[in-house]
Image 1 (cartoon, rainbow, N blue to C red):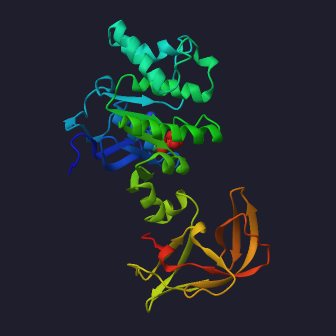
Image 2 (cartoon, rainbow, N blue to C red):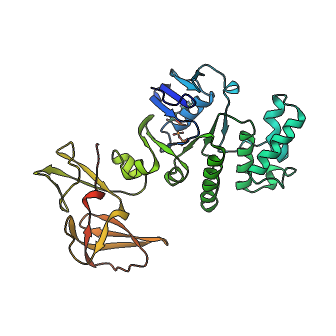
Image 3 (cartoon, protein in one colour):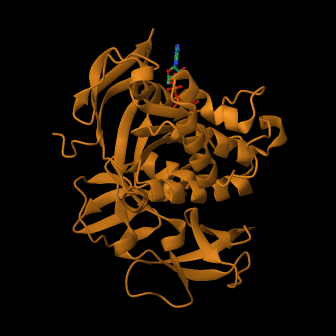
Length: 345
Ligand code: ATP
């Protein structure tokens, strides 16, 4: 059922290339004004799905509805959907102004309006001082902004972003992610991003769809998918997770490291639970519930935190750097019942 008539609705989308089922029966609703991310490992089908939304690829079956209109058979140029590609695809022989104006010129928009619209998007992306420069005279981050300005100047209903930050170094990428999020909130426009970078997805998105082998495994807000991963794949793909296998009987989950109380009884007898490394407390004394006596076996310093590995397990704990431990320390780990996530698969 479509709840937002101004949104984008994908229904039963399938695409195969020879033997490869690139996208399998994807049904999704992306609300108008939402920052939506397709997240998944290489080859999971996210780019193929994005290209079908853009009209650059035709699906084998299924439909694409934008603002209550079936655009399944509409060519890319008529869709009011623009894409920013990983490579930026700027014209090297055109200056920044002309790169941004290109789409408007080809649509025969009057010169005066082109000037106003290009200037507006240059200002919006803080490129106002460089319209006469050429792409090779700009930094990676600036070229990325030009690519965004060039897409936004067309005032698309939906902006697609195909790994647009992957060419940037880690520090700049983190900065551009925040800028992109702010820009999208300011514009209130629908953005759909494709990425394999889980941190990026968590930073920018209103909602994330986690993909694997052509299917959407789980979707929800960043908090929902991070805090309540549905299965092992999502738990491990989004951040680090300790996975504990065991048997649930007599109201207790029995694992190799000891018995654990759960807040929510699992729907299975044999299964796996997850706990994030930063949700485990390290204590000197035994906690009331779910205390595991453990010994530090490895310490990895990460600047903002330390990763401690404990035996039995191994269990990973993410700890503040102001707390000091050494290998061989014997301590109590508290795996509080409210932090234990029951996985379905
Ligand atoms: P990446 O992050 O590496 O770009 P992706 O998740 O975007 O990966 P897709 O590019 O959508 O994945 O590819 C999904 C699957 O479809 C892969 O197995 C890929 O090899 C295959 N595929 C994609 N395009 C084609 C094509 N034109 N011809 C044949 N196979 C293709």
